Amino acid sequence: MAHRPHAYGLTGEVQRKIKGKYSEELEQGARLWIEAVLGIELVPEADQNTPLGERAFQEALRNGVILCKLMNTIKPGSIRKINESTMAFKMMENIENFLKAAEAYGCKKIDLFQVVDLYERQNMTQVVNGVYALGRLTQKNGFQGPALGPKEADYNPRNFDEETMKAGQTVIGLQAGSNRGASQSGINFGKTRSILD
Image 1 (tube, rainbow, N blue to C red):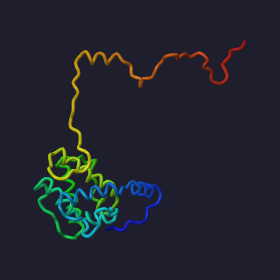
Image 2 (cartoon, one colour):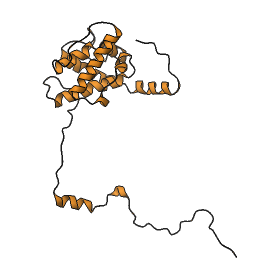
Image 3 (cartoon, one colour):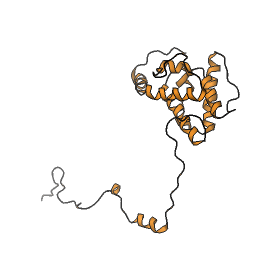
Image 4 (cartoon, rainbow, N blue to C red):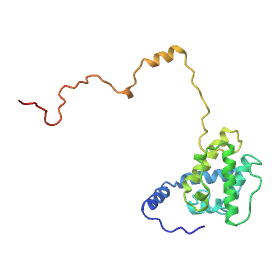
């Protein structure tokens, strides 16, 4: 991993805020889901009831192999080549391939993470959120394996008849405010203007 100096000022404040949002409870849910789908342990001999922690979770996913295998289990053949090499650019290529396959599967780009978020542990909160986004989408797309998080909602259009639509146009919502009791009487600011002869 590249050495990054200690951040100060606004950058340091942003990094501390991102690290403060990390939830080991959500990480544990993502970890158990990945292990259940793949049938392997992310960290061999680790306690299933104890979260791995940000650093160990990142190390388990850092090379991208687990993520690629996860995507291929969910949608077979979505990632053709998984690099087993320990060279940095090959590991980052695995992560990038996972992200492209997840986006092609239907995940929104905003729900996913960037390569450096995982590879350099810049934003592990977003990595966990990306795993949850994929887990939610698998339920919607008919994956028969374990589920993670609530199922995403389907499109549900509303069809109202003409009478109901016209009735809604006559109602003034409270968001528009009210003019009851409003007048300009008694409004004086500062000294009044007087014209003297």
